[in-house]
Image 1 (tube, rainbow, N blue to C red):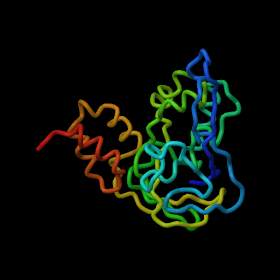
Image 2 (cartoon, rainbow, N blue to C red; image 1 turned 180 degrees about the vertical axis):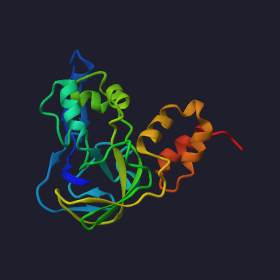
Image 3 (tube, rainbow, N blue to C red; image 1 turned 90 degrees about the vertical axis):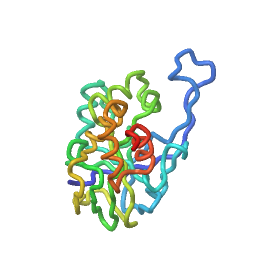
Image 4 (cartoon, one colour; image 1 turned 90 degrees about the horizontal axis):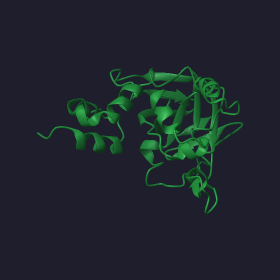
Length: 219
């Protein structure tokens, strides 16, 4: 695996009051991220210079860094007819070639440069993606094609640079690929015992654990 690019963004205001199309009405987000050149510091709370507009649902130690599969972009460009789609379009911080939701598992330990990461949960796409792509169905498309991305916890801080290898150091929970975890979250109302099993995974983010346990059978 190779780290293709590193992206950061700051909150920006979009839209206009009174717009007829709901997608054109005012919204604020840091989803539009731009690639950086050179070595970049990644700390416990994320990539230096990166920000989130709503810290209630974004950021924090369990969701410090958002990663995305590099090969997804070509598929999106073809599907959407948008040749401009590339790194940073989905709000991702790290773009990794050779990784995707079927391969990456919850709890994977990954080394890039000086930094060490742990996969904590799939990314749950929200309506901001609809606005970003100006499509009412973008969230549904992301879920249907299972190109969600995944969040990383920063285990060891350090300097990272695009072009560095992304090395899988450990895979303690191969039974929990990101894609499987995403499907379980969607189907949690009827897969309560599976919810309990995933919630028991020590690497899982606290927010996902709470949601899954709420759906799990009471003992």
